[in-house]
Amino acid sequence: MPDEIRNNRQIAIWLLCVCAAIFVMLVIGGATRLTHSGLSMMTWDPLMGWIPPLNQVQWLDSFEHYKKIPEFYELNPGMDVEAYKRIFMLEYIHRVWGRLIGLLFLLPFIYFLMAGKVAKPFRPKLVIMFILGGMQGVLGWYMVSSGFDNPHVSQYRLTAHLSAAFIIFGYILWVAMGLLFPAKGASLYDIRPLRRLALGLTSLIALTVVAGGMVAGLKAGFAYNTFPLMDGQFIPEGYAMLKSFYLNFFENIAAVQFDHRLLAEITILSTAGLWWYARGFELSARARLAFNLLLGMAALQVSLGIATLILVVPTWLAVSHQGGAMLLFTLALFTNHALRES
Image (cartoon, rainbow, N blue to C red; front, top):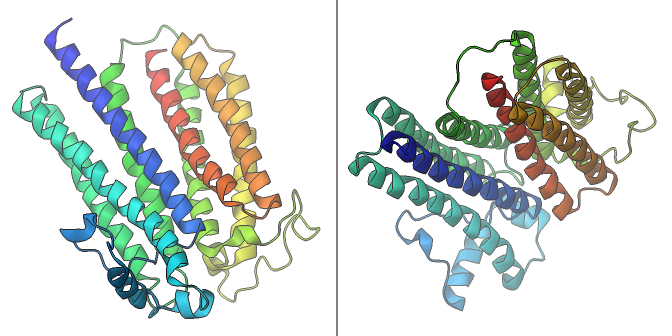
C-alpha cells in the first residue's frame, strides 16, 4: 500500500474517532439539558476545571454559587446539596468530555504533522477543525451564561450551539470520507438530478435540526402532547399570537412545535420519495446502501420524535431523538458522498 494511501487512511480513522466523540458529546449535552444540569457550574477554571469539588466544604461553596441564579430560587428552591451534586456531575462530565475531544484532536494532529503524514494542502482543513472546536467551547459558555439572569438559557444561543456541533461534525466527517473514498472519474450515467435532490434533502434535515433546537430551547415538547393534531387542530389556534409575526417562529411555543412537526413530516416524505426516485438510477453498492440506511433512519427518527412527544419528553427517549438527528444527518452526508462515485 503506497504511503500516501496509508497515511490518509490513518488520518481518516482518527477523524472518525473524533466524530464519534462529538456524537457522545451531543448525547451527554442532551441529557444535561433535559435534567436541568447545564447551569449547575457557575465557574469554569481553565486549569483546575478538571477537578470537581473533593470535600463537603468545596461542595457547599459550589452550591452557594448555584443558589444565586434564578434557576435555583425559581425552579429548584427545595434542592439540597446531594441533589445538586447529581446535576453538577453531569455538567462536569459534559465539560470535561469537551476538553478530552480537544486533546483527542490536538495530540494526534501534532503527531501526524511532525511525522510528515499530513500533506500540505490538507493542513489548513485540520487547522480549521481545531479553530471551530475552540469556538464551539466559547459558544457553549456564552449559552450557559444566558441562564445566569434567567431560569432558562436562551433558545437562540442553545440552537446556535447545537447547530455549530452539527456543522463541525459534518465538516470533519466529510473530510474523513474524502480520505477513505477518493472521488473517481466521471460516471457513465447522468445522476446530477439525484445529487441535487440529495443535497436538498440534506439541507432540509439540517433545517429540521435547527427547528428542533428551538423546540428544545423553549421546552415546547412539553406542550401539545398529541399527534398528529395539536389541541384537535392541524394548525394550533395560537400559531400567530405574537404581534410581530416573525417572532412566532422563534418565541411562540405553538408555532415552534408546529414548524418542527411540519418539517419532520416533509423530511420523511421527501426521503421516501428520493429513495424511490433513486431506484431508477444505476448506482454503486455503497450509494444504494446509503439510500436504504437513510430511509430506515428517517422512519426511526420520526417514530422517536412522535414517541417523545406523546410520552411527554422522557429523558432517555428525548436523548435518543437528539442522537437520532445526528445519525440521520450522518447518513445524509454519507449518501451525498456515495453519489460522487456513481
